[in-house]
Length: 228
Figure 1 (cartoon, rainbow, N blue to C red):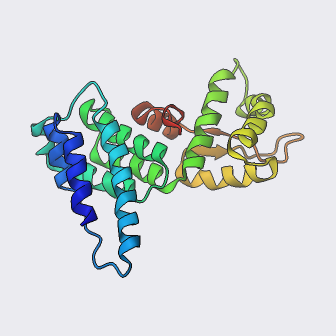
Figure 2 (tube, rainbow, N blue to C red):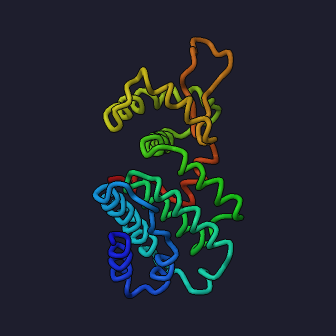
């Protein structure tokens, strides 16, 4: 059976990391009854690839998981919720980003509570890989274009948009006409805020990142670092 083979393969891959081996055993590999055996094998292979990316990244940090940590109920809650998100992710970069969130949260104790972890996990889970990459790109432009003394967010946005928008098109295939619509969608995450108000010669469409985005980056890092 493909699920058994994939399980054994992962266990062998981490034979020198007993905690990871224990976590792998907790992952439900079964997919129920399959009508098409060939399709079931492809599905299991895809799941195994996702989990391999996840566990490779999870075990790559300087601080390793401990048996005591794995016995903690809060950790197990975060772990199972993260694995569920991993198995729904199509991109390897997003899978590794999820692993970095869990690793930083539990081994470096960067999150303030399990509620904060669930909130940050929800952001990564709900946004596409391209949307996360777009937020990262905007962050790099904001860092390169800091607010000047007395400067408003709109003024800073106008300065950086002339380079941000073309790079978004080049890197992600997002045309200037589509960029505003995608950024409006990103407001639902709480990571981006459009600038509104009655400003002279301003028709809308510009914005800035929020403190929530930088909190996510503080814990999980920059998704550009795990880009594929």
